[in-house]
Length: 96
Length: 152
Image (cartoon, rainbow over all chains, first blue to last red; front, side):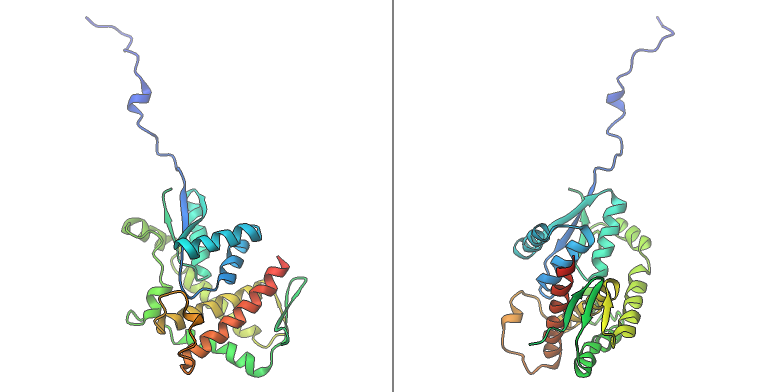
């Protein structure tokens, strides 16, 4: 027995999680030489953070050893990472 | 003590004597001695791996920014050198000073083997030339940052 019309196919079963960009995190790591004031300035300048938010992130880097300072698609995250490197901050990228 | 940097509408006014400017300019001497030699501890500090543990993505990142970091650093040093005697710095020139002084501090810190926070509270090493210069450049960078933060 056959039929012309194909059986209904459940697309959600075969179309396994399309490769959407779920976003990347830019992580800044603590280093003992960069000044706290300079790190606050860089966060304000590059990301437009308020003084309070930039200071909170700087203290998180200082106390916890690292902080996520921006998130977004890979292209934007890589640009942010590059700009941080240009300012001498130790930055890496990771999936949240 | 007089203020070396005072906020202006688009940057800072600079009040530094020739000796101070000469010392700040030593940042360039520090950086000119850094050439990416793998044996130099400064090399690992100034060479970044954006995707640690993922060589493929790291290589792609390096391709993306290939040469960009080095050329941006070169441009910074040129602008820094050109403005070392200026009495006023606009925002871009002041940022450039921060980056050059900061980079020289990182090189000095790596060569002094500074690996832990708290070194700046230590009163030892005060007769080591690199440490004296590092502390001086710290004060310069901090004063300039404070002046610029006031203008943000």
